[in-house]
Amino acid sequence: MDYKKFSKRELIAILDVVHSAVFCRTEADIKQLLEKAKELVCGDYSICGVGACSSQELSGIKKVINGNYPQEWLYMYDGDKLYEKDPIIWHQSKFSGIQLWAETYKKYKNKISSDFVSKSGDFGLNFGISGGIQSPYDALASIITFFRRKNYFTQHEKEIMDIAVPHLHQALVRICGGKINSQLPYLTKREQEVLNWTKEGKTDWEISMILNIGERTVKFHIQNIKRKLNAVNRAQAIAIAFEQGLIH
Image (tube, rainbow, N blue to C red; front, side, top):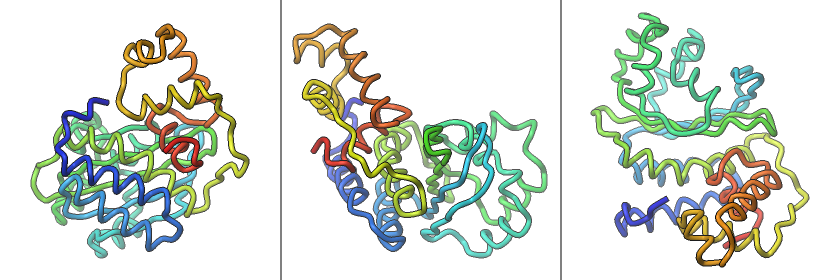
């Protein structure tokens, strides 16, 4: 990740989100964290949740924490089981990462029901950004969503979410009933060095130059780190390591 693309204000806000996520202990803390993340991506509304996931299908909702989504929409969404028709949920239950609603709607345009489009349109829910992690290790999928009434979200907000979402996921899973391994994983000194430089945004090649090791060796260490931490990608590995106190 090239941190030069972010402003000083954004970097300070990103660090605040990361730090706050580590110390989240209650649902109220999650709501405060959502508010910070919402301001970071300039959203108007926020909501997040964790669900059980099997075979890349959402099989049950464990917990939903509403930042400030319209309550009337949530009643309708739940009562009419609109989550079964929501392309954002379809996508997030199968893939980790960040999605712009506009792009996802295009991807699933032949499957989106007119009923869902009509009802969501009544509430002006057309433009949003969502992210989450679908983790095979604990059979949980998270989704963190920010909505704006105007089509504002861009690739830049996706890059901000790439950093923030893994930390939000860890806080959600910790508080909402997920299984967090209480036994601290062991990282070698070299693995800690590689992960710390990864956290700083260095590429594999740059890390190999800094540590005077081969680029293949860096990749080998990254794979070991992800395996030890049960992380689906580098960003989640960093988030888990922060939470476990393995890096600072």
